[in-house]
Length: 394
Ligand SMILES: *Cc1c(COP(=O)(O)O)cnc(C)c1O
Image 1 (tube, helix red, strand yellow):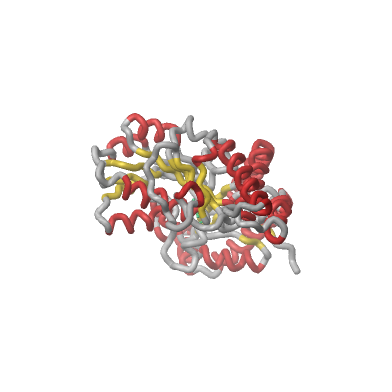
Image 2 (tube, protein in one colour):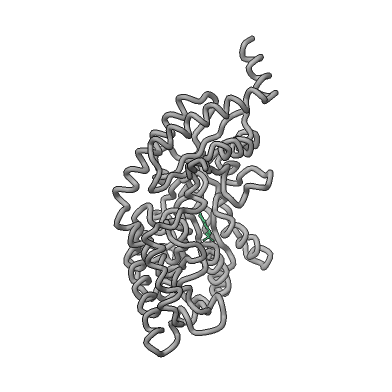
């Protein structure tokens, strides 16, 4: 079998062998239910406590502010729905952005149907929220601001600290979807005035199906899943012990390797961007040139169908994405690319390449050659490109 080049780390990452190894004993050896009283259960309970402490430490939070969930989507749903319910006597207005993940956007639509008013902020051409717009959007009835830390499609980072300060000054709660950023950039919930933060294990070389919501002490949020007393009565259900253990290990690893790993990824990312922009004609980079996730590159190729490009890359053993995994399969162009002002036909020709800790320069060289070849091939079949070239020559 041909070796796979995996450049879709924003969709999910390979679970690190070290993480799998840490999880294994919690399937068939230490399988006790953490809520039980005997010694075997104590092992599970201890492991959960340790993971919680590692994760809390990574954010400068207290361990009783970390609530495990079944992933990033659940954490996003919980944050928004529970704040809406708990604070509706104070107001019914929520501010978010047009470029959030669907776990936020579709939850907002759900809340709109139930009488909440949502402001979806525009972003600039790089995908950055304008603080002036945010300030203007705030009303006396605003109860929550939810802005993602970094975008999953174009990698743009938001001015989280400034947003947090603005929310705090006005007594408004601030939630951030940090699924893409956690483990890639240092985050301090106190320094950034974050009241709630969502994260997911499988985006940082941890297992799938485990995430957490950080909830600052003092917030009155109802339980998300009703049942037993797990997660301090806020999220019932027998804990996903192996998942939690793997998550803790993944976070510990991510912290330990952050500086070196992201420096390396940044260098490779810039190499990739530089070469594609200079060696492929009619291409643009989406997202901020420098203020972006260390591992994200997102391009639009004129006169190319993104889906065809993906299929042909796949035939060369290259895994990439045309936007977010959730939008592929539908013919609507990405809401993020439209929000940064791309016309439909340009947005359709886009390609997201997200590097991982194992990506090498040799792999990128192969990918760049493949892109050059495939883009030319697709353009040679495109009537639009033919017309354009004819016009250009006149
Ligand atoms: C992947 C992702 C999610 C969803 O996380 P799951 O654990 O897959 O549910 C939410 N927000 C962002 C920004 C993501 O990239």
